[in-house]
Length: 155
Image (spheres, rainbow, N blue to C red):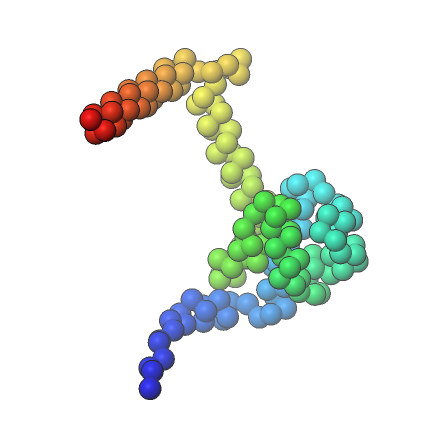
């Protein structure tokens, strides 16, 4: 008789104790709305793209109904995000959560990178350009050495 493998329920228990089903539907709805607004789409546009009625999609965003797996997959593809993000799989805390804060933080990081890479006239920063050139040269050299090693290996 084959012995059953043990299943670690730690994460599942954390997930289950954090939110009940109606709260989870609300969280998913908030995420769907936040991403849709970030993409600049209307509920009607989204529902047309994924092939469902606008009223049905609205119930997913307002958390009164749970979107079926196929709808979640289509939304994931439409928004180019993981289903885990749409479903808030990683969220196991009731702490403050604001999707806009995450987008703002990402935008701030991108602004920082732009400021490092460019000068006041929005042209490539000379120091950054030098660093890129040095990296390019190093990769070129590695490529040449690799090709030479491949030639020698064939001999």
